[in-house]
Structures are given as C-alpha cells and as structure tokens.
Length: 579
Image (tube, rainbow, N blue to C red; front, side, top):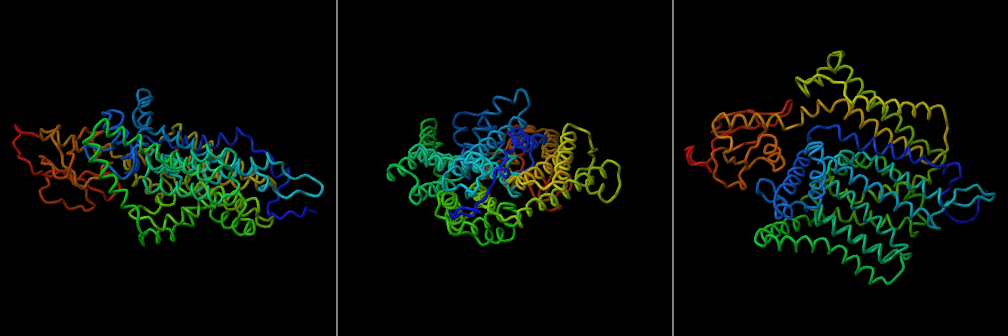
C-alpha cells in the first residue's frame, strides 16, 4: 500500500543501501589510472594537445597565451587545457618524463568531472519533490540515502558510457569540455540553494569552456544557464541579477585572457585573436548532413547505456517533467540538442560532449523508476557484453604468447611487428581487474540483490575491467603501432645523414600534432608556415608511390596506410646558406 502522492519513484531502505565509498573510489581510480599505462600518444588530437602544452611550458608568455606549434597558430580551441597540462608537466616532468606528466593532467579533469557530477546530482535528488513515494507502513529510503544512490548511479553510468571512454584518458580540449560541462551543471544545482553564487559559477564554467574548447561550446552552455534561470521556478533571488552574474562569470575568463595577451604581445595577439574569432564564427551554422548521419548511425553505442534509461525516464516521469530535479537536466539536454542543429564544421562526437553529464543525471532518475520486471536488463547487458569482451582480450593475449590459435596470434603480431608480449605491471592490473569482474559476475548470478545501484555498478565495473585488460595487456603493442617516435627518429636520422640535421623542413600536409611529435622525438625543425622556403619538405600521404622530387622514404608506422616522404624543398641546395 502506498500513499497517494503521484510519483513513479519507489525505493525501499534496502534498495538504497549504501555503496561503500572505498569501492566507488577504487573503481574510479583504477578506471582513470589505466590510461597511464600508455607510454606514448596514440591520437593526433592528443599529440596536438601535447605540443601546445609543451610550448606553453617551455616557451614565452606569448606562446602560452596564444597556442601554436612550430610557430603556426592553432585557433580551433582556446588555451586552457594546454595551461593545465603545462602546469602538470612543470611539476612532474623531472620525475616521470614529459609524456607521462602530460597524461597526469587527465586525472585532474576526471576528478573534476566525477566530483561535480556527483555533488550536483546529490543536491537535486535530495529535494523534497524528488523523493520516492512514502510507503503506508514506512520503510522507504531516506532523502540522504536516496540522494546518495542516485548520485552514485549517475557517476557510474557516466563512466560506463561507451562513446567517451577514450576521451577520459586524454588531456585535451574535449576532455576539458566534459569537465566544465559537469561544473556548469553543478553550478546550476547550487543556484537552487545559493542563487547568485550558483549562477555566477555556472556562467564561469561556460566561459572556461569557451577558453578550453570552442566559443560555440561556451555560448551554448551559457544559453543553458540562462534558460535554467528563467524556466526553473525553484531558483530564488532576482532573476535579472542572476542572469547578469552568469553573463559576468562567462565574460570574465575571456576578458582576462584576451587582455593579458594584448598586454604581453599586442601585435601577435591582434593577429592570433583575429584568426581565432574568424575560426570560432565558422562553428556557428546549420549542421552538416554528415554530422547527422554519423549520429543516427552511432548514437546507439555512443550514448550506451545512458540513452535507454534517459528515454525511459522521459516516459515514466512524463506527467512530472516540470519538477525541478527533472526540468533542470532536461533544459541542459534540450539546449544541447538544439545547439547540435546549429553546429557547423565540427566532428559529430564533439557536438554532443557538453550535454552528456546532464544526460547521465537524467538517466539516473530514469533508472529508479524501472519496474521490477525490467530492472535486470542493465545487469544482464553488462554481464554479457563485458564478460565477452574481457574473455576475448585474454584470448588474444594468450594467443600472442603461445602462438595458438595462429590466426589470432598473427593479428596481434601484424599490429605490432617485432614486439614480444611482456609481463608488466599492466598485466597484473588486468589480472586483478578480471578476477574482480568475474567475482561480481558470480555474485550477481548466484544472488538477487535489491540495491538500486547494482546495474550501473556492473556496467561501470565491466567498462573498467575491459579498459584495464585492453590497456594493460596490449599497451606495448599499441604503443608500437600508434607511436610516431620511431618514425620521427628515422626521419631525423635521414636528415642528419644528408648533412642537415638542423635544416628547416616544410610540412604543409602534416598536421600540427604530428609536427609536434616529430620535433619532440626527432628534433625536426619545421617551418612556421606552408609558404616558407626550406631545403626539405616532409610529405604525408596514404599512397605507396613516392611524390615527385622524393629523395628519401617512405617512413611509416607498422600496419597503417600512412606514409612519410622527404623531398627537396623550394630553397637553394647550397649548404652554406641554410635557412
């Protein structure tokens, strides 16, 4: 028997039993520390972020304020993520090396994301209108226990989201955007109890997002902030003052950054900021068809497992969507979806990053309304998908070690020829994570726990186990396959063999991130512009045939279609007149 208050949320004291804090913290630590097993940078976007951070740490104030690589201005993103990475490199490069110190900054972003997401959800779930229905004879969850289980579920669902796993291990603008979107959400929830401070914090997070990622992302986070201040009636205080404080918070980081840049290097800053403004303006426009096609094809896995729970929450709460704990995340999600339709010139996955934290929160509120007949779906999905994934990874690792089955062993060997499997600390972590995972598989198969967090816990634990196995068992192979270190050193050695180790090298077809790695590992000195007159030119192509004028190459990573050639540049070949 239940009271007559209309709400689909029902939770008993037993279902809200506390997930041990040490277990949650251990899972989060293992998940994010798995990314530190990589010894090199695996993506071009990560390499570009590393190059910007390296310049910010080692260069002048102007280079720190105006991101660039090899004298080439990079205006797709702001400098904030590079500043954070440069700070970590300044603190820890002497102990761990530049690459590892750079990766450590991902810990900061992950801690900021999970902390703000948890506390923001907790504040929402403890509100009176969010509470589950009261049982006639008592026994329902207390507001504190209910708030904690919803907050735990939101963080666990966020960790388990397929599409953002690799982003968590990077330290670039996209990772920073995720964190600042979560901080924006936290500021919005705080505005319910502290209207002016919360509005200012939400606006500040929007400005920092523009400084870390794109102006597009910052503007739409700010739009979500203003919309929440208008439509959520539970926010107290003067509305106009709250909106003004949000606008002030958003403008403050941009104003301080541009002011400092113009003060330190007026001419360079004027040129750089002009290019930045033109590039950021290009991001505002009607969405490209390719972005919509990508999302329609991939959203099922990209937003899994949060999207089914979010849709279920939309259905089950359909008569109470004006309640504060639902309206606030829905306003953020709706603003993000509308913003996606007005995005132009951005990759499809970048467009949806800013509203993933709010989607995880709404999915957590949807989870608690799932009926008993359907509440085990997430459990069985996690058990089947991640058990199969972990077993497959171990099967390939064993085949790599013993050479049987030969087809599986050959697949790994082709990925990284010349690399033998090693028993490292990463292997130990993978073994421990696998044992814990299968221990929970046995627990779930042999018990019928009623705790509400069991599905999100199994999904996040499975994702952690899969990450630990893929990175712990195969990081040496992936390092060999994805690293540009050997290619950079071979290219530098060829330049030195030709008597020009310090010669200027033009590279109009080579992305700035790859240029940064060639400069870092090989000491190659690239020209600051594509029109520069240099003795040599480095050409990047996907074809095996050498370009016209080639004098050396190809240089390539194993099992990729990427090729690098050295050919004569436009400058004179007289060695007495090097640029």
